[in-house]
Image (cartoon, rainbow, N blue to C red):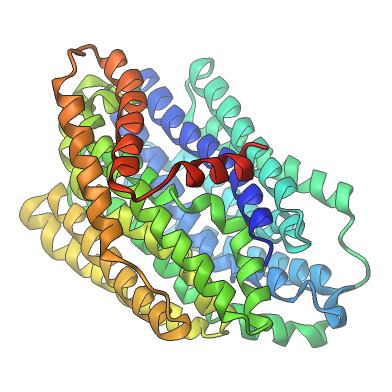
Length: 477
């Protein structure tokens, strides 16, 4: 296992993660400031539908592409096979949505949302088809190109949304601009790579579907975890409540991105090590990932909570920020848990035990929906917050136990203790700083906080100067 390659690929992925964060913040700022909170609720609801239905229709075929691309027996037709299956799935899902839309119009959930139906259906279709296309570079281990393409997509979406809202004040046009960006980049990949090298081979379809279909419940469960709460809030409460929750959720969810830079390269890396039965390398890799996530995640969660109100004020409106910031500290716990479990999922994938992952994800999603249905009528937004934390912790506990049993990952509680102590010192220093302005706090607190926290870890002996030099040589050179 080339750990340096994992690290450098992850660094490139980190840039894409930053762009993803910027996109999320930009969308909130543009829509809430130029339109209103209700418009942002409509946007969130539209993408909840795209995300959920697109996940069902995609059939996790991009996972099958990555899993089987390196095999000589499938090297010539695998992409054509997967793309053919994706096109068929997109056709069926689109037909289903059109039929459902004729029965239950979007305006029954969000006033004036009927104009969004056509772009939403089109986005679902392009999502299903584009997943294997975008993942083709990743399947041939061109991770940096994959990240570049995703980064270009994010930039294109930001520009398209900004133009649509600032100039035309149209959510519908903003959705069409996202569709256009995805379609254009998908075409670019097909032209540049020319991955279709022959006609599809139906005899291979069973192999791909046997691998991918057990992952569909997992994918649907994951989307239910992230999107069902917003749709249920819209059903039980009002679009304004959805906007408040979605803004807080958007900020806190950035903690879940702590390990996101690893995802693109970790999947093929873990599968390769597993097939060589090299559990020693896997144990070393995952021990390092868990150690790093804890050391970075704890101060990040606390720092995000401290800065939640000024950040939300800059991201949205003062009115939304004054309500949403209260939920950020609690939501942060759930998303820190998510950052811990994301890399662990690839162990289950590598062991071809996708059914287990599907079962725990669906169980967690069911828990999330039940808690939302019970708690939202009783305590409002707080009910969705508690449901999010509880359901995420269920997954994290299960995957942690699985990792311990499978590759004997070890983890020292001393790391947690050091992170807590360093974070406590950081908080004390930040609280006594004579900084009052919103922008000043957002700019200065992270810089000073990181410096104080690293100094605390050096003093405690948790990290050393050598660790910092090794980090620099791996990521900076």
